[in-house]
Length: 362
Image 1 (tube, rainbow, N blue to C red):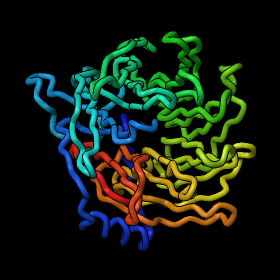
Image 2 (image 1 turned 90 degrees about the horizontal axis):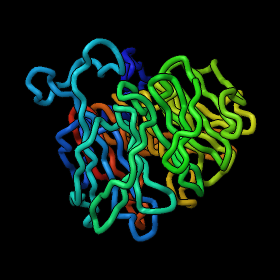
Image 3 (image 1 turned 180 degrees about the horizontal axis):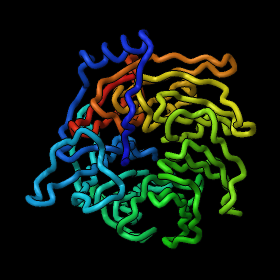
């Protein structure tokens, strides 16, 4: 399995109505055909660069003709015999009002994750050939700075995250491992999950979280990797796919799963969630709103359920879905840091098999 679950998610009537309404309309402010299947999207968080965002793509090619392979009924495999060739592109956009203007594109191996550095205008890119590549934004173009061979070319780098206040990076690999990268070198690599660890994320300076297809959520101390400091194996009915520490509360953690539930945990006592909220589909990415004024709003890429914003009321243990946007297979979603209007903040989303990217307000 690559990115999508094979089991069908059954929704309660109220969520079915929300998803149905989203799929029927809600025209976007801008729409772009990314040509290749799109799976990652992220705005630059740095002041002066908020208009820039990247979209990463992952495309299968026909092994005989080299043409774009048709969308299969199931997602591509991370292993197996004679996989189809996989290619990707980094697409760099700048917003002109609400319209994305393509500034650059870079041909790459198939991309699984893209993250902006928290301290400088650079991106790190995780690809399907075991590499992590860093690009600097210079004059509206992307320039490659370094390429790190995290694993062999048959291993997928599934996700990445930057250490707060540092250029260190943590990555998760299709081999079940996590890898810690410092100064362009892999300094630690260890077995973390029995199956694909779809996600890893920093929380604070020394804590790393990971989640995988083994239905496990794990916490690690990066100073003593190899043995988790916490393991949660019960409570998830699907693989753990996304982990997002709150930028507003150092102890709050949002965790998404194929089982279509968004769970909030107190990282100090994570054995049981503070809140579980059913979403329109399996959750692939989760993004907290960057503004303190909207600290309870969480944007989610909900795969077959499109995209949804959940509003969490801290202290009350309550949550609700406030916005939904359509998408045939929603993988990427992020908030823009530009000043909002009365209608809300700008949001960018991307959908996989229909290679569809959109800009909305929420």
